[in-house]
Image 1 (cartoon, rainbow over the protein chains, first blue to last red):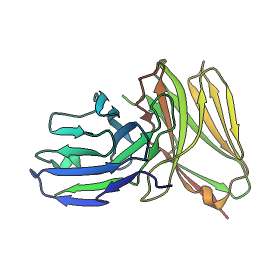
Image 2 (image 1 turned 60 degrees about the vertical axis):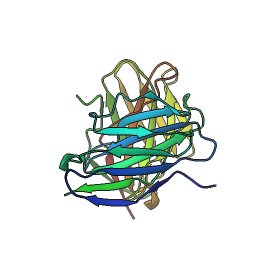
Image 3 (image 1 turned 90 degrees about the vertical axis):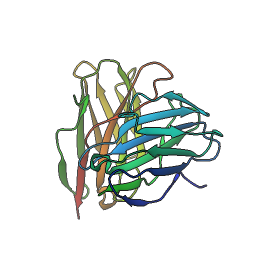
Image 4 (image 1 turned 45 degrees about the horizontal axis):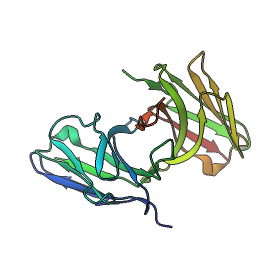
Length: 114
Length: 114
């Protein structure tokens, strides 16, 4: 079956612009996660959804970052007033329920802020 | 503060030999540990996990060992194959359902030499 998909695969933007990154989880998975991976680092947790609600958003670095999952399926990560330091690979993962279930990752969106 | 540490950024092993990847953690609240494998331009792929109530878990060529008192885990791959060449991430999750965010190490790049 289809895995987690993310669009776009690459995004180049200018400092100060607004970007949206999309994640389509595996069908039927109620839990969805966003992580960010900077060069030479491991993935860093941003936010976790259980259904439509954000169960844990403790990893969002500041209020320029926001994520939604209005219908409990597709999620969008929104970054306002982008900064060069936001450049990274943004990874999305999903799991069946979230309770100790394996998280399946998508290929990521590579964001470059010039 | 790096709560999950992979101190070897790279490792080269001859095909057919054993690969041993190490991981240390500092947070005593972690009680579930996972290994992910990552190829370039792809998302991390789940390999194997272990709960803190066990000290060993085996799945085919992959075995994970956990030493809770030393806060250390290792992944053994035997025999190593060329397709095992990838970056390996150790990840940990705290106890308690609902605490689903993974904390990752910085990864070890494994190269299998034919």
